[in-house]
Length: 338
Image 1 (spheres, rainbow, N blue to C red):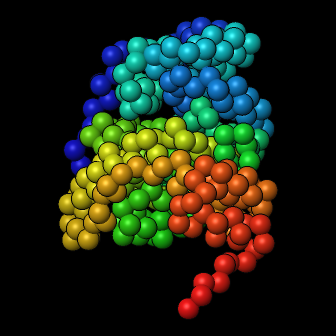
Image 2 (image 1 turned 180 degrees about the vertical axis):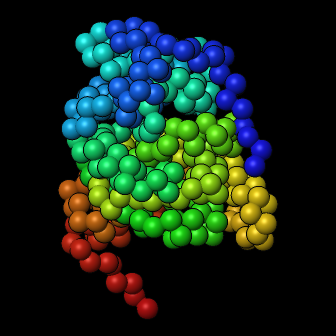
Image 3 (image 1 turned 120 degrees about the vertical axis):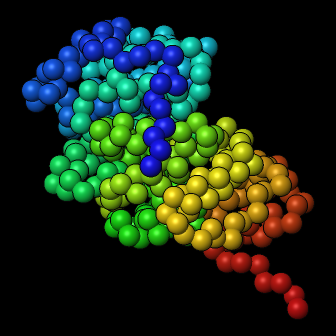
C-alpha cells in the first residue's frame, strides 16, 4: 500500500519536547518502559465553549499513565488562554501551538511527536468517561491483533441532554463488512484508541478525503490489523448545529464516496452502488426533529419533548410538525383518515 507522508506538518518531530507548562518527554525513557502508555491526541480550533469539560474528563481518567497532546490549530478565541492555564497545572499536558492549517495536519503532527505505544483520539467538545483509558488499554494489551478499538457512545446535545446511544458490533468481521458494504464509519472517531506504530506505518491521516479522514483511516487499518469495539459506553459524543456533519454535509458525502471507491480498488472488490449526494444541508428544524425522534425511541423523553416543542415553535405549519409533537407528548401516532 502506498504510504501517505506525515511531512505535511510544517514542523518536524523533535527528539525531546518541552511543552509550555508540561514535562520534557524523552523518547529514550519511553523505550525503556518508563514513559506514558497512552498519547491522547486532541486537536482544538476555536473550541472554548466546551473545552474545559473535555479537558477535565481526560485529566480525571482512572488510568494515569498518559501524555495529553493538545494541538491548538491557530485558535483565535479563548482556547489558547484556557489551555495554557491547564498546561501550567498538569505536567501530563503537552500544549502544541500552531498556525491554522486544518484538522489533518494537526492530527498528523500530533502522531509525529507522540511518545506512547497507544494513541487515543479525543475531540474538544466531547466527554470521556473515567474508565475509558483503563478499559481500552487493557483490551489492546490483551489482544495484539487489534489495531483500532472503539467503544459504545452516548450522544448528547449542546448542554449535555442525552439523545441516544450508539452500540456498534464488537467483532472485526462485522465492522469491516459494514465499512465495505455501506461506506460509512463503523465507530465514532473520538472514542477510538489505536496503536501508534501502526498509524505511522500506514502514513497517518490523508488530506485527500476532507471531513471523512476517519473513514479512510478505518479502511486502511482494517487492511492491516483488526478493528474492535468495547461493548461499554465510555464516551459522550456531543452534537450541535455547528457540527461538520451539518455544515459540510455535501463535501463529507463526496469524500466518503471517494474513500469508499479507493478501498474497493485496493481490495480488488466490485464498487457498490453509491447513494446519491444530498442536494442540500438539513435545516435546523430537520435536525431538531431528528434529535426528538432519536430521543423518543431511546427513552429520553425530556430531551424528545424539548426538541419537539422547539421545532414546532420554529415551524408549526410544516408537514409532520404536529404529528411529531403529538407522538412525543402522548406516545401515540396521529391516525390519518382514509
